[in-house]
Length: 232
Image 1 (spheres, rainbow, N blue to C red):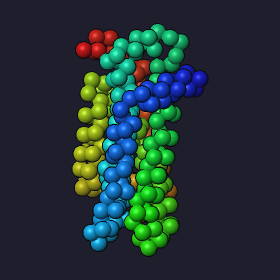
Image 2: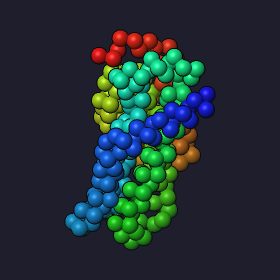
Image 3: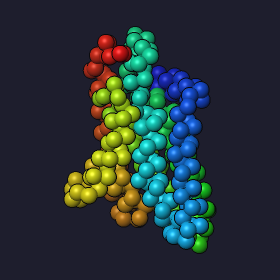
Image 4: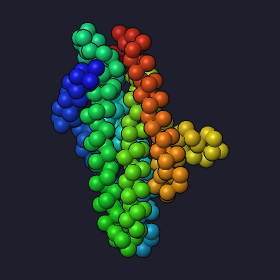
C-alpha cells in the first residue's frame, strides 16, 4: 500500500506545483507575521495576536484548502475510475495525499510562526520555550486538521472544501464554548492547550487519536463508497 501511496504523493506534488492553491495557502500563512507587524506597530501584544491568528485561523484553513478535495477532485475530473481500476488500494489515495501535503503544511506553519515571533520582537516578546510549545502545537494541529479534512472530504465529496472549512472554522470555535468533555472533540482546543503548556502529553495524545479516527473514517468511506454518477 505504501508504494501506491508514494505514487499518489508524487502526483499530488506535481498538481500542487501547477495549481493555485499553493499561492492561496501562502497568503493565508503570510497573514500570521503580518498580524505581528501590525499589532507591534500599534503597541499591542503582537506575539499573542499572531499566535492566536495561527491557531484559530491559519492552521484550520490551510489544511482543507489542500486536502478536503482529496476524493472530490478525483470524482470531478473523473480520474477516480482510472485509480479504482488500477491495482491500487483505495485508501492509498488518502494516505498518498497526506504524505505529500502534511509535511509542507507543518514546515510552512513553522516558518510563518517563527517569522511572526521575530517580527514581534523575539525574546523581548516571549521566551523561547513558549515559541517551541507553539511550534509543537502548529505541527500537531496541522496533522489533525489534515486528517479531519480528508475524512470530511471522503464523506461529502460534492462540496468538500465548504464543509471542511465550515467545520474547522465554525464548529471548532463553537466546541470551544462548550463544557470540557465536549471540548475534547476540538482540534483547536487541544492545539491551544499545547501552546499554553497545559497537560501537553494528554493534548498531543488527543490530537493523535483525532487524526487516527478521522483518517479511519476517510478510509472506510473510500473503501465502501460508489462514486459513479457523482461527477456532475
